[in-house]
Image (tube, rainbow, N blue to C red; front, side):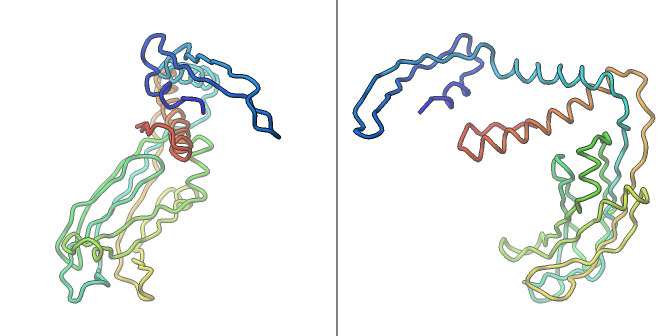
Length: 240
């Protein structure tokens, strides 16, 4: 087996190399035909490859200025008749969290009430490239509602689906959403959410604009690489 894990972990060391021996065997008799010593060295560390990818994508995008920059605002305002199906009584302390696209998770505060008022606002600066457009057209934003007062294992109130395609069609969403829980056939209350997609004035500096866009594209590609590496047991490297 090629020692690629050790090579990747130590890729930032100058001229670091690994050595291994590969045996060639006869498929029928399994007798050794030859032993080959192999030495492997990365010509450049992985950080160089990342910088090269950014520069390449930046050059590609510098001639393509069709992607609009927009700001997505998501406001989680209040809840109504929220109950925890796993806990008797009406003493709940609900909070809401979600993850939009590949941004980090966002959380509201916990409010001790069946009719909480969170008034939480979350903003995301995005470019309307094909990947983002496809995401908004075909995905729903899942928001999870938890009971901060209940113990682990019994703190799940439910979830809501926010249909993001309405942002493309109408530019905004204002709606009461039913809170659903797989263990119950009835809604566990409702939450009121507003979302709006606004155009941001285009940057006068094309290089600055392209660098931000490239950062988004590079983060997409690196996250994909991270998932593939994790699936095959390669070093766990998080790309933020």
